[in-house]
Image (tube, rainbow, N blue to C red; front, side, top):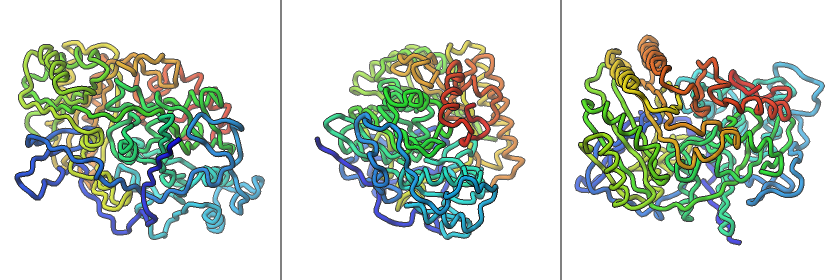
Amino acid sequence: MTLVTGLLSAVHSPFPADAALFPLDRAAPRPADPAQPYLAVRRLGDMTRITEICRPAEARDTNSSPVVGRRAFLGLTAALAGGAGLTACSGQDVHTAQRPSRATASPALKRTTPASSDWSALGQDLDGQLVRPGDQDYSTARLLFDPRFDGIMPAGIAFCHSAADVATCLAFARRYIVPMTARSGGHSYAGWSSTTGLIIDVTGMSSVSLDSSTGLAQVGSGTYLIDLYGTLSAEGVCVPGGSCPNVGIAGLTLGGGVGVLSRAYGLTCDNLESLQIVTADGQVRECNASQNSDLFWACHGGGGGNFGVATSFTFRTRPASDIVLFFLDWPWSEAEQVVAGWQAWAPQAPDELWSNLHLLASPGGSTPTIQVGGTYLGSVSDLEAELGNLYAAVGSDSSNPYVSSESYLNAMLLEAGCSQYSVAECHLPWQATGGQLSRQPELAKSDFFTTPLSSSGIGTLLSGVQSLQSVADEAGGQGGVAFDACGGAINRVGPADTAFVHRNALFLAQYTVTWDTGAASADIDQRAAWQREFYASMRPYASGQAYQNYIDPSLTNWQQAYYGANYERLTEVKATYDPDHLFQFPQAIG
């Protein structure tokens, strides 16, 4: 058996006190040589768009790209007797990871506000680092991805290095009744990966290991997607996932995991072989199809933060073959035909083809834009034949087509908006040395569509996008809707086979609006009102289902929207593993 392990960073402080924040949607820097061809890409929220094409696009040698991560990896199993292996776990399926602890010595001595000495004792009990208000790293350690939540001031952020650290934190939260949440990538649209109490941060558990004899990859729950892609692609394999580079693998997997290869390889959770999770009672549980199988089922789309803190995942890997990327533009005057043609074509295309459709406008701007993009696992000539079917459905060819075969890693960097960056640079500044990304405020809502949009629905869609132009532009930003094609491998799984119930959709919609950091509240309110009205106008045409990873605090029927008929079974799993609701937030199961 050959074991390849990617260790993601050398020991260093991950939170430089003077870390700068840059506009998230700035264009990638042009090459120093003006004759060198390049692709200018902007990532707007969860939308990646080509904004300038200079042909031909020259592929980089991915073998020379550095793979640099965020924090030093301290082996996940170092503090555990009989920790999770690379194959389905055997032996004891539950074991205790709590070590003798000054911070958790007596459950009978509960109080609601731990003293400073209690927090100090917690920090001493951890192999990782506890960051508290007043500490040098606190100003960046507390931040989520969205600046909207920068006002949340946690009492402590525990950067856990092992399942034992997680169990120690849970015992602390139980004893003192401290509000607690787990954080991987920190991308919760509602800000629920932060709290005024204790954040259990798992980014210190970020190892990626491949067993080449089985094709199984063990992935620490704090691994960012771009690091996962960089490490595994060097070995010629991949795990299908999303395009946002610093989303954490834990949140993505536990909520399902829609991505650019989902139609070919399924959701991220569909490729899950086993996982390790620390439940509310402090037990470290190995979960697979035969051990804790009910919890394993729930972790396939039941949503993060509901049943425990995941510490590692074991995935079945897929070949990291070259990917043909395409970006196709039409004038807005043809938007109605493009939407009608795309929705008839993309969900029914071969599994190897995944496509999205972006409609964007700017407050106070001129004509909106419409773009079809996507990926294809095959040859350029075969893709061009498939695009011919799209052109026939639309009734016209793209006015500005871009088609290019890229290595897997280059394709994922481009989808991430990092076409001119290395893997190390495709991070926020405090996540990796040399990180070049930044943050922008965003609001998002979602819909699954199970039937095609009627002509009336398309008209309502276009009117909703166009109406953003009437909003004043003082706060900058953009807004619109992105459709991701479903079908293929996603829909061949039964709705009750996993907790992810959305197995009959044609496409997933995400309605987003962004603005500049520091914008006036009145300008933000106008953008939020536009989004609410746009979303409301699409109610007659949508299925009522919503994507649990695009968590929406305004949903009143979230139980049905996220989980449908699977919700009752999820509440039973919750009652088994967290009967006292230690894990709670406004849309927590149960």
